[in-house]
Length: 167
Image 1 (cartoon, helix red, strand yellow):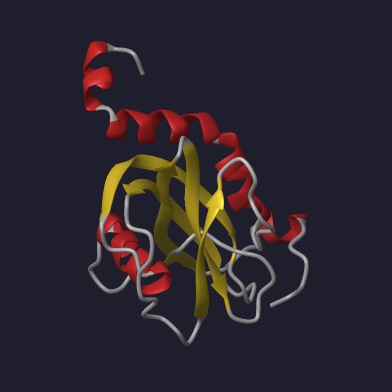
Image 2: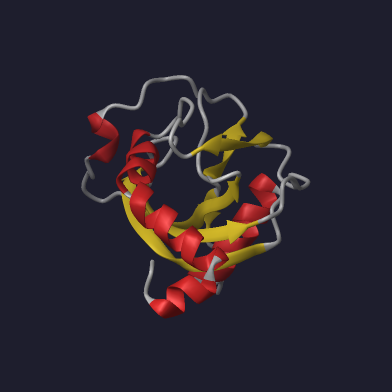
């Protein structure tokens, strides 16, 4: 989908079914820089955070882990906490999508994308220099939460500092 995403995607219309999805921002540190895993959906311009719909009787956290593995190939991830809930129309504008994002840390550099029908690439993008992203709200989320992301990943990697109250 190469159409531009404007404000109309963030206005809910009446009687639209709701779709709950889960995913997250998976981050890692390399030489003092924080990188975030972004995936490319076939047919779309720009990148997205890995996420997708819940399966029957699936919890948000289990769905997020499954979607990250399917879309980005990342499995060695550690939960750092909730990040945000973003709402918008689905890709086809036929559902109201309620997207739950968690924050994860990893040292894993690459993995095997399982959902190759829809996704063809995972990249590590610098948090301070994000590439073009398909969903503007996901970009705004990463920019708005940059300090929280930095603080949480550093505290995760340096638990002694966290216990002493330096972070």
